[in-house]
Amino acid sequence: IALAARSLPPQQQKTAIFWGSGAAIVLRIILTVFAVALLTLPYLKLIGGVLLIWIGVQLLVPEDEDESVESSDNLMAAIRTILIADLVMSLDNVIAVAAAADRGPEEFKLILLILGLAISIPIVIFGSTLVLKLMERWPIIITLGAGLLGWIAGDIMVTDPAIKGWVAANMSWVSEMHVAPLVGAALVIAIGLYLARNKG
Image (cartoon, rainbow, N blue to C red):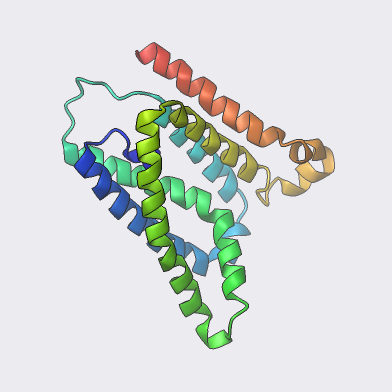
């Protein structure tokens, strides 16, 4: 969230964090309700991993200074990036939330689920604001953040139902040695820095 909002003016940063976080929480609630069914769909994690790599690369490429884009367009683009990234990164996370809520009484499961996710809103917003301030002081965090998106992308792609069994049977070392996450992180940083250097 902080990475997506970092290029906006200070006032719009707060707006992007607030609306992006709020919309991401609503999206996470919807995802959690359908979590079990979603994660059994083949190729969903593969597509999500590719999206995360694309988002990570885009975060490393600087925007053109002379680009005449309305501030509202930038704000909406930041919110859209937040939503896409959260959608992809929530896939595994929502399963844990759904499992925790499943331990409650049957008639209160959905309420517990929504309440638990809603409580996370101020935590997400506060965390994003803090990271934003840290990125302004130490820009290397941007590269590390983009690399983290690549790491997550590689990690979720090898657990996709379409290839998980094949990877476990033929390339178990990929999971055991964290090869896929490392490749994902390296790919995002390498492509992002290459494009940033050429653009600069």
